[in-house]
Image (tube, rainbow, N blue to C red; front, side):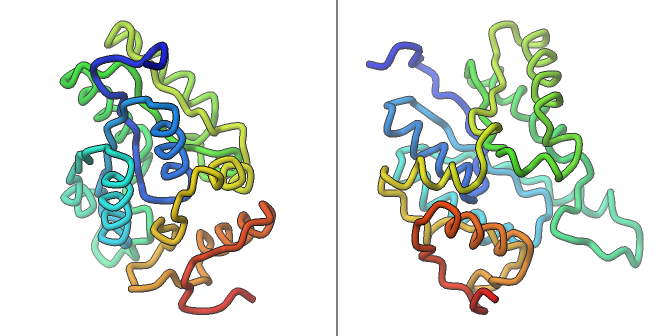
Length: 213
């Protein structure tokens, strides 16, 4: 058995996207026990994310734990506000705070999140400094608990290239910001997905509603 593997699975924040799916597959290949945690914070594509999470969790033997925070969307939305894909301010802070409590409750010793290098443009909550600070706080609150972002120095293309030999079915992952039956091919996340597969030199198996430009 791999050194460092504990009786209690580590917690992995799984969205069903490229990076978290790749990290789950890598953990499984290394025989690390991992429990997937998915959070519904009112994002438009929640149903599509959850479908991807359920599939991946089955393939990689990780019983998923779903956290329902949909009610917070209304609390953080003023009347007549247009609500985009990310309706919850500072969601990484809130999700990690919940994960710390979950880890303590379940006896997990590690929390994994799948930020990549390109996520740094998404705000302070996606920066390496934030991860270090929240990890220090978590270790103070729950001695021995670690928060890690193993992919944070890698590009999306590098993540794909590293995980592809594991046989991951990328077509069952979900990146699109919308909640349609097919990934749109036009939103920023779809464009980043397409660009990453091209940069990695790996065919993109995604069935986009609109072909890449």
